[in-house]
Length: 77
Image (cartoon, rainbow, N blue to C red):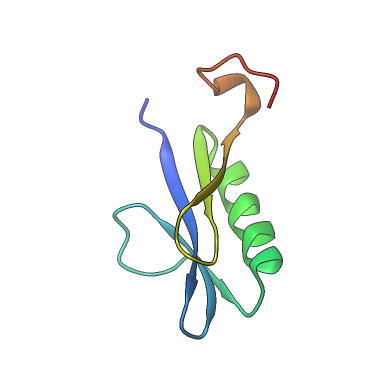
């Protein structure tokens, strides 16, 4: 089964959460934390999904996999 990937990125007017390859944003907001919360909620409901969180400058910050048991890496982080 293919994993659905979402990216949380900064825009000129705030932040957005968008499915990779999607046309529209799944979540938009003024703060990173509110967009992260909503994007993570969507990802958890999808099952077998991943949220990639970016910094203000667009660089990678963090990756989260849902459900946790589907994470292929065995790391403490």
